[in-house]
Length: 204
Image (cartoon, rainbow, N blue to C red):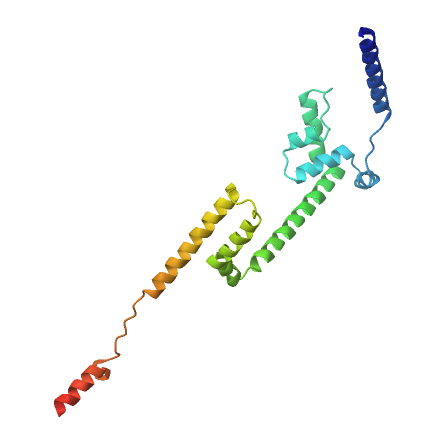
């Protein structure tokens, strides 16, 4: 039994070793489109990643590190110098960074315009309909239908309470309207029917 376990352990080690070797033989390559874009801009793929992160608002140190440009063989000062060289002296890099920043700002403005169009499309009637108790009641009843057959669950109870609250508010509003008393006053004493009748009677 011990021999079989040892043999199985050795087989597992060999399989893992073979997998590691196969992994070393496989090479991960970037897309042709990315390579073509970088060649056209005159920058490396890592430099492109660095520029894109900066255009998105990343801090230069964080972007430099995560893009893979930071070289652990060099000390901090040399890495910082290389980063600053890209940001000040490398024309190709700065041209691409400027272009990427403009594209992102343009997309942000387009997105903001779309949001404004959506907001402008909401009318006063839409707001009034959304705030109306009838509309709220309709939505709550539709939501509660999802829990048909599950009466008694927390969601069903919560929705039922909300429906009851809105229904009671509606009843109170109707009751207030029914008990409202309106008083009408004459425009002037000369037009009062009581005054005219008394005057006619006094004249007789």
